[in-house]
Each structure stands twice: as C-alpha cells, then as structure tokens.
Image 1 (cartoon, rainbow, N blue to C red):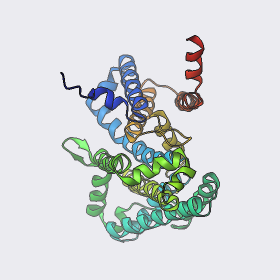
Image 2: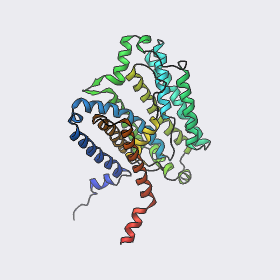
Image 3: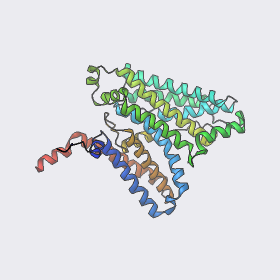
Image 4: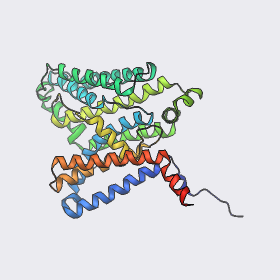
Length: 340
C-alpha cells in the first residue's frame, strides 16, 4: 500500500487565514503589473527600493493593529503613539541627549500607554473604542507639550552632525545588502511577532479571545494578561514607526502619525485580518501593507490626485470588511445549499 501523506499545499491552504493572505498577494501582483504597464518607471529598481522602505511603516502599524483586531478589539492610539515617540526622541536629541537614552525614554512612554490600554480594556472592561480614544488624546497631548507646542529643531543641532547622520542612516537612509535599513527593521520585527502569533501559547490565547472570550476564560486563558500583551505589541510597533519618521525628517513633528491607526486597520483587513476577531495571520498583513503602499505609489506615479488615491483605497478597505462579514454570516454557504 502507498503511504498516504497529507498534501503539503492543502496543509498550507488549511491554515486559518491563509486563503485571504494569498489573495492579497495575488492582488498585489495584479495591481503592480497594471501600474507598471501604465508607467514603466514603476518597475525601476529605485522605485522598488523606495516602495519597500515606505511599505515598512504600514507593515509595522499593520502588525500593531492586527494583533489587537484578532482579539476583537481596536487601538485608536497607534497614530498618536507614533507622534509621541517621534516628538520625545527628537526633543531629547535636539537638546543634546544621546540617541540611546532618547530612544529608551520614548519606548518607556509607549510601553506605558500599551499597559494602560490593556488594563482599561482587559481588566476594567472599557469598550476598546472608548479606552483607546482617551489614550489617543492623552498621547497626542504629550506630543504637543513635550517641546512646548512646537515642532523640534534638527536633531543634529543637539547631538551633532555625525551622531545625527548615524541615527538617520540606521533607521531610514542607510542600506544593508542594497536594501534600506527601514525594511530590514520591519522584516525582523515581523518575523518575531509572526512567530509569537503562530507558534506560541500566547498566540493561541490571542486567537481564543477573539473567537470566543467566554470560552477562552473557561479554558483558563488569562484574558487581562493576554489583552495587555497585544496592546504592548501595538505600542512597540508604534514606537518604532515614530523613530523612523523622526529619522526621515531629522526632527520631530507634532502631527506625525496622523491617521496611522486607520492605515493599520487597512493593512490588516486587506490581508484578511477580521475586525470581528479570531481570524487572520500576519502574512496577510504583510500582503495588505504591500497592497496599500503599491496602490499609493502607483496612483501617485500615474498622476492621480490625493483624493482619488484615498477614494480607491477606502473602497478596497470597505469591500474587504464587507466580504469578511458576508463570509462569517454564512451567506455563501446558504446560497450553495439552496442550489443543491
């Protein structure tokens, strides 16, 4: 008798959320080729490198929001944590504080926000929309106040040109093996959080909470601790994006990160992460971030107005969420049964 082994492809496709993730990558290829046929410059090596670097920010905030969405919650403070991270780091460095200290202080502020979000939602049962709306205003307020309600001066004016250039090169302008460091940083963070979500007990608990929080409690899942962990992940990713924006501009901007929480939702749901919780994988978020950036890049290169760009991307996000709702409601299955 032949030894029947499970088909590898079927096993991969059977992974929860893999179908949606692969669909995002197929869509990415189609979109990229379509824009390239309209404007061949889309295929240029420099444009690809720029696309990867720009995509990295969306990937990181996509990871942040995806972790939270899978638990059935949301984090509205992501964008303002990005701004807070950028402003704290830039303010300290522009006043002569060494980069490592400035980075550490901004990390501490973001982690504190993540813990507060987790406690408010997990322990005190506040609706995540309300809890993170509150911390959204608080963190944006910190971003405003940290430098006296004004953008910072150049970080090089405080730490010197050599240290300033080193900071900028590490987080944004420098390359390793011909690819911008920004992408490598995002890829490493993606690999770490992909492993945690897909291969650890914490990851299983995250999915359990999003699928059925009551059943998760009965199974012994520490809902408060797990919820706090996902908001900490969100804080870490937001902190890193803040550093990237600070390095890109060589200064702190009080409005940095504006609307990034929504960009994170877009990257997740385009890649198949359900806003209703319990479904989605970070591979899909990677694809969603790539689709988002490719759309933005391609529309810009063919001369589309900003309003058109936002309109197209908004329609795609709504369509992705609508598809998820329809699939979860079982409408496809019902129609199939009627035909049989």
